Amino acid sequence: MGHRPGVDSLEIKGLMMSFIDYPGNICVTIFTGRCNYRCPFCQNATLVLSPEKLETISLEKALAEIQKRKRLIDGITITGGEPLMNGDLPTLIEPVKKMGLLVKLDTNGAYPEELEVLIGKNLLDYVAMDIKSSQDKYSNACGVKVDLDAVNRSAKLLLSSKIDYEFRTTAVPGLVEKEDMEKIGQWLEGAKNYYLQQFIPGESLSEEYRRKDPHPPERLAEFAKIAERYFLNVGVRGL
Image 1 (spheres, rainbow, N blue to C red):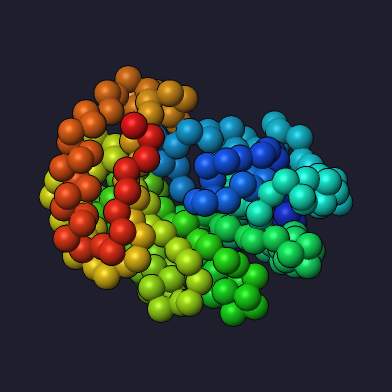
Image 2 (cartoon, helix red, strand yellow):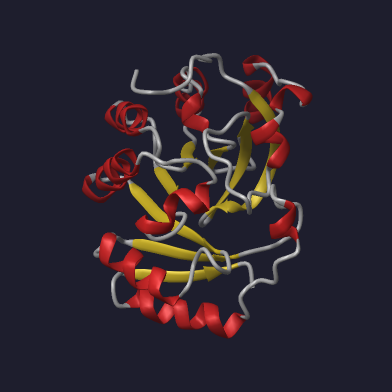
């Protein structure tokens, strides 16, 4: 299907309880391995660059853990890496939906065909899609040449779907500035939810970005004011 690389098996590389990954809900967050992007500011470098170094959790074990915590949680969040590189996500999602739980997917928007299938089968309740920067800086922000048509198709899918969604941008100095906020707003105007996330140098994939200072909080507030002209609900996370 589409242009997903040839590994179709589900690679679960981590699992933890979370109070923040699914807005308004307590969830189990499931981490999948591998990503098609190499964003220099990425905080999950091992998942992206060398997932084989991490133990793979079997689907049976993951489902047993979710079942065990079912009374404590509202749903699951599937994140990565890029989850849509895993061809058999329904083998995880369908049993979770049968437990009566909600399912949130985090995605970079590179795989619209896979996203459309999951939405069409009513397997998703919430999608958070990363918007890395304005379109002219997109490949720089992702560290690879990006198929912007695919990203656009994923965005349009969410804008026209009935499920809850958000677009979110990590405000990385140099990659996301005032002019980029204007362009992102014009690009996705009318979207329901848009969140700015503070950049944390921490364990960034690129050493250069580990030495970068984040935007000051007042600049993020300025970015949010620009976003409010274009989106129905705007928030800032990570301050």
